[in-house]
Image (tube, rainbow, N blue to C red; front, side, top):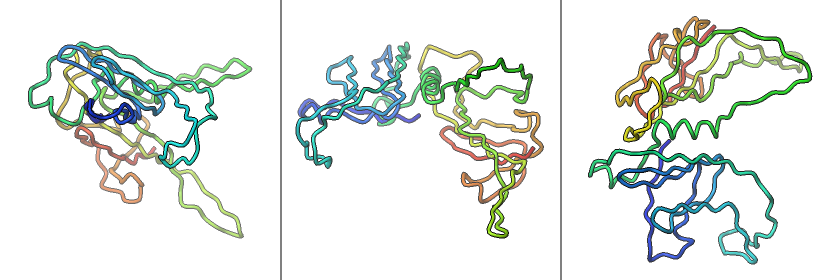
Length: 243
């Protein structure tokens, strides 16, 4: 996940120092980083050094001339989920401090994924039968995110004022390789900060696959069949696999 760095402007009013927080915010010095990961978009600011202030809600008695054309007096109770991560960090290089873009560490990326992709619990009245299945043969690298793995269908046919669609033995695998900040002293097991290309072998990843080929994100244009696909940091790639 890519973060935009902001600076507190003392000459501006308080409201001008608040910024949108889509998924997280962090402050850091040369030794420590404090990150707050959020499951919902909110407003955030750091009005004092070493402090983070998150706007959970606001209430206005009159219009603030920002396009709403009315006050905000119909507030509702909502549930907000957060993860707080404190990490010891190695000092950044002098040329990196002025960059306007920042990135989560491996630990921070795992924390934000746990918020945005929680485990779905399904409850039933009867005791389910145990299922034994081993399709995934390898673990994904910690900086690799499988955005979606969805089945595909054949083109819809229209006959006698009826339409029908049949499922195909194909699926679209969309992979995203994030860019981690490698300065954190907290590490995950069996991980490494790779700055070069990362090779993915779908046929070895899932044993039931028969073929794989590069495709566009819309799955309209297909490339040649291949057994290896290389992703650079911050790449998004779509792979069409057949069963």
